[in-house]
Length: 101
Image (cartoon, rainbow, N blue to C red; front, top):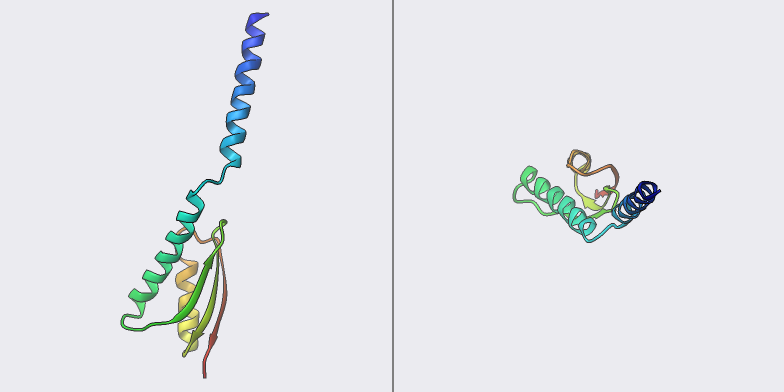
């Protein structure tokens, strides 16, 4: 009978530990979001040295990126979207950047 009690206790302990580990998001989400945004901005700066852009980059906890702002060339809009899409940790991109005429 004691063996069955230990099996139940160990099983419950593992269940509780697993539940806590899976449900806690912790502060790592913010670090990952900021890291993804910084990585995208660094890649844009590398691809377009000396240029500045008024672009907003929002990153969700799930890694979805939303781009908005203005650029002066449709190729820049496309390329910035591709840069974001190819950034590690990004799960999807919504490119709402507009092209100024």
